[in-house]
Image 1 (cartoon, rainbow, N blue to C red):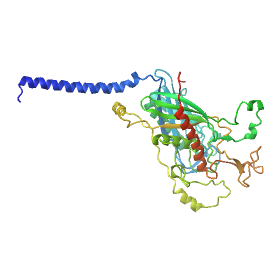
Image 2 (cartoon, rainbow, N blue to C red):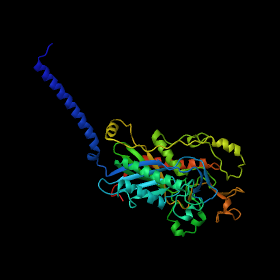
Image 3 (spheres, rainbow, N blue to C red):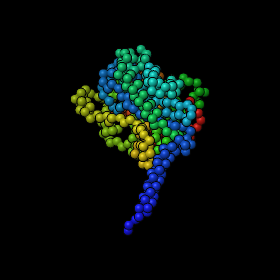
Image 4 (cartoon, helix red, strand yellow):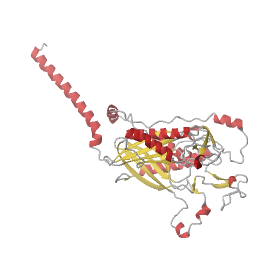
Length: 428
């Protein structure tokens, strides 16, 4: 069939108009998907999470926590991270909380981090809304604090320890800032009974009976968890507070480790990523297939240098992964249609009132006799150097670290799954 020039022109123009209409329809859909987050969402907050490696020097640096001059780093149990959580009101205040796999925060580190944030963001992040906290592991590199008392055993300031903390904290905050999106926060609480005991029960008994009668236990057993949900992605992270010392690894340990809380954080992040609960462990291997290690404070350990060298050959530490960010409008639009760029789940296990709480739940024993330490003085024959606490995996410190970490992780999963009380109100 032949068409006249007028008929062809008319049909051609109609086809063009239909094509243009289709293009405009898709453009409108793209704009709607992009803008709907800020317009349609009724979330009270914007939330952003980030995570970055802060492992630091793994050899020839004294560790922070035990103040033991002989505890010198000589390898890595597992890597350390800074985990950041930002909560912001749409048109108001915002708060940054950074949880470090380190013994403690540092005024000097905080000052330098604030300087960098000010150079990048102006007055958006200052000393008034940035909080940095440590999990109190005693197996991280030392030498990064500002006071002489804290750096005596490291023989002074260690620039490498300091720089890795500042860099890692800054990068984790940048990630969290770039991940800020509308979301909600939920809170849940519960008791965890088998992850901490009073390390000085005799001292606790000196408290007045009237005061002791107010509490069921001689240490705080409560875990409080915050669950963060993104309006689009759903759960994206959590952190919790629970009191237990970062001393599942003893003062003779020489491998960098986040101790029980660092382990718990890894367990929960892996659990969420794999959509499973917990991890499976064989009789011979701990987390990540790392062989058990027998503590060298155990009285039945002999000089087995050759065996230790063979054992060291099995140690592996997988590299950390930064939390994913959403870099462009096009990526956000694609992600709205398929979940190919969901931010990595971030979970932090924070420290609270742990002063008298030990993870060595089997009690304290003398290394020379194997008998319990003196109840009132925590000594053995008058010497406190011989009195050591035993974790649930004794004599394997790695196993004790795993068990106490896993107990916190499992309680956190329970609270995470049932968190339904939504937080509201101003951010401060």
